[in-house]
Each structure stands twice: as C-alpha cells, then as structure tokens.
Image (cartoon, rainbow, N blue to C red):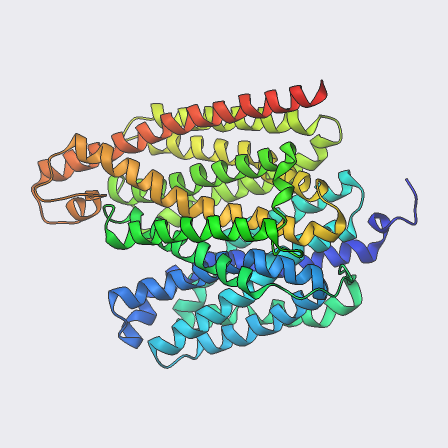
Length: 486
C-alpha cells in the first residue's frame, strides 16, 4: 500500500480521534437527559407535557434536519459546518445547564437539536474523505461506532455522578470540553471538502423535510404510549403527505436537497432498508427489555442501567472486530451471518423463562453483536455507493433511517406488545402498555403477578416475531448479493 496515502498518516488517525468527540457527546446526550429529568422537573416545576417536550424536542429537531445539514455540508464545507455546529452545541448546552425556566430549557434543547444535526452527517462524510481505502474506511467506521457505544456506557455513569455531586444542569456541561477540543484541533487535523458548485439550498425543500419528519416522528412516538388517537394519526398522515410532496419536488428541481436517484442503486436502497428495520427491532426491543427488568424483575432504574452495560460492551467488541474480519471475509457474508446471529439472540429471549432474566439479557447481547456488521459495514457500503460529492447526503440518509427506525421501533413494537398484553389479561377500561400502571399500583398480589406474566408473554412473543424478521433480512441480503453477482 502506498505510504503516502492519507490512511497511513498519523494525522489522519488523529483526525478520526477528533471526529470521535462529537460522537461521544451525542451518545452521552441520549441518556443523561432522562437521568436529569426528575430533578430538573422538580426545580423548574415542569408539567407532564413540558417534561415530554424537554426530552423529545431534541430528537424531533435532530431527525428533521439531518438531510438538510448533510446537504448543506456538501455545499459550504463539511469541516466548516462541523465546527459551526460544535460551537453552537456548546453554547446551547451551557444555556440548557443554567436555564432558569422550562421555556428557556426547551428553547435550548431546540438549539441543541439544530446543532446536533450538523455533527453526525459531517463526521461520517469527513471519514469518507479521510479514508479512501474501503478496508481502512470500514475500520474507521467501526472505531467511530465504538466511540458511540463507549458514550452509551459512560453516559449513565457520568450523568449519575454529576447529578449526585453537583446539580442537574451539570449533565449538559459535559458536552462543552469535547466541543472546545474539536474547535481547537479540527482546523489542523480535518480536511475541508465541499462540492464547489456554489448552489444555494432550496428552502422550500428544507421546509418540506421538516414538515415530513417532525410530525411523523411525533406521531410515531405518541403512538407508542397510547392508542391510535387523533394526534398520533394526524402526525403520521401529515408526515406522509408532506413526504410524498418532498420526494416529488426533489425529482423536478435542478438542485435537489436529497438526490432520490440514489435509491435506484439496489445495493444502496437494500442496505438503507435493512438498517432501518434493524433500528426498528433493536430500538423497540430495548424499550421492552428495560421495562421487563423493572416491571417483571423488580429492578431499580440504576440496576437496570447496569444490566445494559453488557449490551454496550458487546456492540463495542463487535464494532471493532467486524472491520478486521471484513479483510478476510466478504462483507455480505458477514452481514448475513450477523443477521442470523441476531435471530438466534431473539430466539433466546423468546425461550427464556419469566424468572430467569439472564437468558433474556444474553439473547439481547447476542443480537447486539449480530447487528454490528450491518451497522458498521452497511454505513460503509452506503458511503461507498455514492461519489465523494454526495457522501454528506448519503451519511444524512443513513442517520435519518436510524432515527426514524428507533421511533418506529418504539411505536410499532411497543404497540404490538400492548395488544398482546391486553389479550393476556383483562384490564377494566384500560389499553396500551397498562402493565406499567397495574404493576406499580396497589392492586392485589394475584393481579400484579398476572400482569407481570402477561407482560413477559408479550415480550417473548415480540422476540419470536423479531427473530423471524431477522431471518428474513438475512435471506433478503443473501439473494440481493447473489443476483448482483450474476
């Protein structure tokens, strides 16, 4: 290999370390807000609906702007956008940390979502610029994803420590040192890349993308915690209508915000679809597993969080080993084998007895390891399927599919579990995941035990369905690549 290639330079790998910083921050951010919520709600007298907005508005805005920011980075410069986003994320985090009112905290969370949307597509796109060799890029993406999992591990630990030793706002201050480091080191270690086309961003398309994703994510998240009510249905319908309008506009304008022709590439569209379904299954099942440990096994939130460490460690290990294996084994083979392993993991959850939770945790850890090749290699395949000029948009599509997948998982799998639960136990006037209210109530012991068994049954059934879907994905990927070779 040419020693002058960027992949062999120490500076390039230091650049990857710099790109890992926003990844760590966003991973930590996903967990610390939930930890801080009880404390900030008490200090700021936040109502129930205000608490939901504090938690959810960040994700709504982030998911809605990923495509826009990926496109913007391609045009004005990915490093430039990343540094601007890092600066504003640090400022918004400081505002959230010292917010004296609920309204100002929600506003700060909106700003954090806007800034956060610049970070993920920019980091992935810059990785594609730093590492032109496919094997090296795969390794770099594995390191990048490992950093996300490290953030998921240390997030609850750091957040819990800072809340206990200081105050709830300190968890938002955790983002500032890494962002300052990025601002200092980024200009020296990261290359600049843009298309140099000088084309302006279509603001109508930006508006349509917001009106597509934000109502859709809102409707899907709302659906997970109640029946298909007016607000859930309205959000989903509005999102779909504007989504069709958005796609139609991209096909007729000269400089689209999203190049929908990318989906004509069968490999690209297949990988995006598989990653979306994986996010659905893993996101929804993670929600049920956490509830299972608390509602059925009776663990505290802290103990439940500690039982999540093996999952993160498994993903960390798999993210590191996958690129190494990919140097000897074909990517599609690794993805297919991984999906089969994930299916076996879900089958372990299915057969685990109600009282023997370690088997369910082991099954989810196995599934987490199994999906790593899809996430690590799939991200690389998406970036490799497009020209360097479009890698920012491709990275945004990858991240958007993940965000939507998690929202879909929480909604669809949560609702499926609710239906199964309701069929297992009679709940007077109840609906949805009423196991939460029943098990935490002062009902008779027999009723609580019945509710726990019904919830465990619904969790088991969902796992069986998930195992079948994972197996189906493995078959799909196998045949897509087999036909591609002909």
